[in-house]
View (cartoon, rainbow, N blue to C red):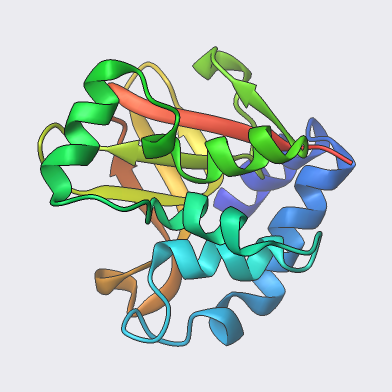
Length: 167
């Protein structure tokens, strides 16, 4: 049944989103065989590498690896509206290869996401499904509980940003 739901959703997806999902399915375990070998950002970088050449600035932006003293600097940037904590969203939009999606009801499978829980950890991945009303995202990503690449649900926090890849 879940596969039918996924296929129905995919029929409404732009072709590039379907290609992103296909790439995640086909290469996910190769890109991220274990979480220790490739965390969420490395998984996203690996998938995007099938669609474009990434510069060192792009990978720094995806990893949210700008110089800082501590993780508290990221929380301050979020509060101040800086684009840097948006990770993959900022990287693709600033490169001209992504369209930020601000209405969660417009998010589709194959869109990329970066989120942060309040004063805690962040995560990124590729949307498999989204339930806006119940604030649940199912993501293709690399995570400890999936031991590398897998699809897993996450509670969707307030600080949650989406981007759609464009040609």
